[in-house]
Length: 305
Length: 305
Image (cartoon, rainbow over all chains, first blue to last red):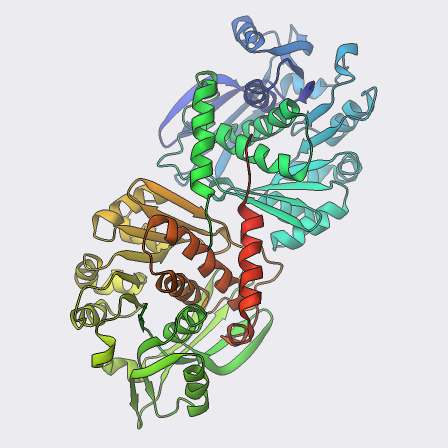
């Protein structure tokens, strides 16, 4: 089924305890689309870049089934740039630079052939952009999922409340869920957030896995225990892309389907952190992915007699 | 199969955000034996109390299948007393008082009818006491598991190293695993700890569940997401008791059996935190436990097509 992803395409500079890269391709849209393209093609990308975004990178992504009819290129400006440094535990990071550049004028216009997409992922962007995209769909998609962050809760809560009422699923990390709800207990936080609009809620807990909430049902997905996390950048977006890519492929939006989709997203994210940037995501084969999903089955499977 | 538990029987004074109790029954042995008694009886308890430990409490525990042939009562002294205050997040606590009292002279002598126990749990005690107990067994038990804590790593590491070589399974929390190994990554920590002796390692992660390591195999068990944790005291000991009680009942020590045992232990622990002290553990029925285990199955179960 057709999948539309709205997100950033960017340059990142990264420092981790394992090394440093100055300027590599990043952005929520890039990671999510790369992950999703393993399950469904084309991935209809809505994004904006400057004249500095490399053509060969675009060609490579296009060859992987990512469609750029919805990409705006602003020749005289620069692409979004983010730079960060991870702490030793890899769970916390400092943002060193955020140059919004072209992102300041991001006002997506969906091409006609994008407007009937059945699966829509709204990456972490200003809520008014997310609302704007939903408003351009020609019919209600089967599934709209969104990401957000503390910045939008602090600065544009009114708009964020509006978009929360328009989506089916919100995906946030544990600290974002706590901030949005004002509750420390994630079960209480989930109830409050579900009352704000999204029927489904995924709370990402990094190395501790993820929780899916739907009504009174809860699914707890493990994370793969890793010896080393080389670079966590993009892991959340990769998770989201794998999640919705899988659902688009099987064309199902049930709770059971979402459980499987979380495992697929987690498997994709476990690859993402193995190298700097999206490097590892570009190498993996369908067999690699299947083997990794099987590792999750072994990891979580049990039988109580 | 016969189960022997060495641990404390004590009084606790507790303060949580939900309330306060001055002097209730506690101790690692009490919690572990109560949990285990749901699966196997008798539970052979090795412990020490003062003259102040209430007879009616002992009678109640005995009626639940806990055998006290291995309990030393010191009439003129006081039982071990611990007092703590939990922080708002319930993950951290301050110890207010630790009165070792009779524990200072704890030097267990196993009764003859205890020495052939096949399943042995060594609660969190001085490593030399743990060694002493193992030395009194008439034959090698099928399974010896142990708990420990940072205090013994800081102060009696030499003895701790010895006992680690004598047991099959070590059960610690994540910060203890990191301290013992000097590794932040739990996968690396597990490898180092397994090299110290125990073939099996369980790392407890509180609200994030638990990991079981055996060779290169890993099992990730979820924790039940709870709206409120009323009082976490004893949850770890309850987990351990449920774990080994279940294994003793099915009389199996395979990796697969341990996976199920971790779920049982987690289910028992999820009851423990619902009321102050061991109160809730004394109320639950076999049906309650079965239903709670089923909740864990729903929580963790998935199928990727």
